[in-house]
Image (cartoon, rainbow, N blue to C red; front, side, top):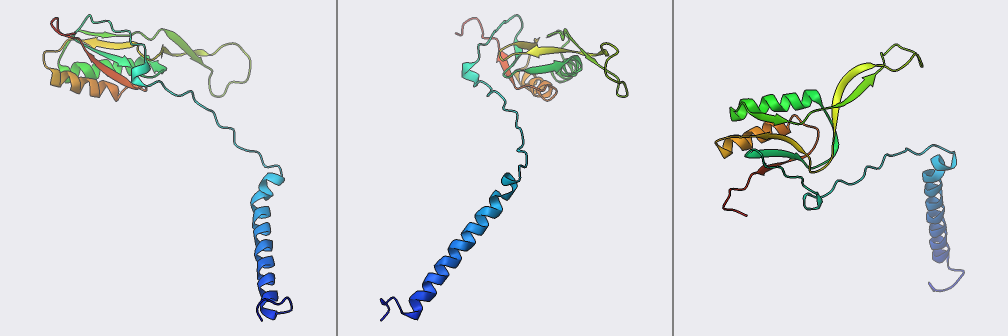
Length: 172
């Protein structure tokens, strides 16, 4: 009796299926409604992926025992270089620290100034750093202190870094 077309239970099942289909259609239209009204989508800036450590062309220059090299690109302010230098001197107790120079000037206009009227005043200097460039070099008697100085200096920098220990003459 359940297979007949005039069976009241089969009519109820058809009505339930139709109701489910209607509900699905309504929910889809509700989801698509903002796009149909022409709401703008967010523009997202896509960053270029940073290279892996094995893909970086390292420019090792072993003039001192320890070197800190950048593993990513970015702008580093002169104040960040100075803060890293001070951190290295405090942690490793060394005086002789080589620091890369920030040579690119950055200007900024005053907050309340209107458009035009020339270029703004000099704000600070930066260094445009690429992966593999040397940032610091220093000598230290103790490797533990050198690693502590590396950690302290890394916290002051806005780029990823790598510590390079100069190989001893017998090592390869």
